[in-house]
Image (tube, rainbow, N blue to C red):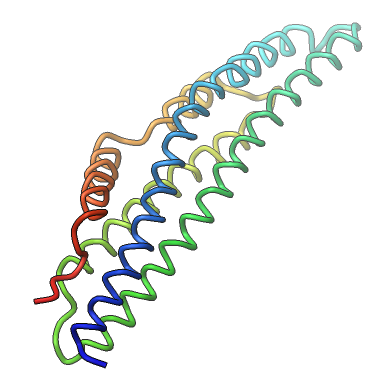
Length: 194
C-alpha cells in the first residue's frame, strides 16, 4: 500500500476521531453551562437549610431538624446527580481522546524514522490539555460537594463550589481555540499528504 493511501486513511480516521471528540467536548461544555445555572438553586437551598438547621439544632423540635436535614439531603442528591452526569460525559470524552491518541501513535510508528507531523502532536496536546482541564474542574466540584455537610457547611465552601462551576480564563480560551480549529478541519485535511 502506498504512503499516499496510508496518509489518506490516517487523515480520514484521525479526522473522524477528532471531530467526534471535539463534538463531545462541545456538548459537554453546553451541558456544563446549563448545569452551572441549574446547580446554583440546590447549592443556595442547601446553604440556606444548613443555616436554619444550625439555628434549631439544639432545640426540642426534632421534626423541624429532621425536615431540614431531609431538605439538605435532597439538595445534595440533586447536586451529586449532576456531577455524576458530568463524570459520565467526561469518561466518554476520555475514551474518544484515548482512541485518537492510539491512532496517532500508530501513525507515528508507521512513519518512522520520519517524525510525526507537527499537527498530530498539536492535536494530541490540545486533547490532553482540554481533557485534563475539564477533569480537574470536575474533581474540584466533587471534592467541594463532599464538604456539603449541613452541620459544618461553611460559606467559603459554597463560594468555592460556585467559582469552580466556571473554568479558568486560560483553559476556557485554549479549549475554545481548539474547538474552532477542529471545526475548520471538517473541510481541511489533518495531515499534509504532499
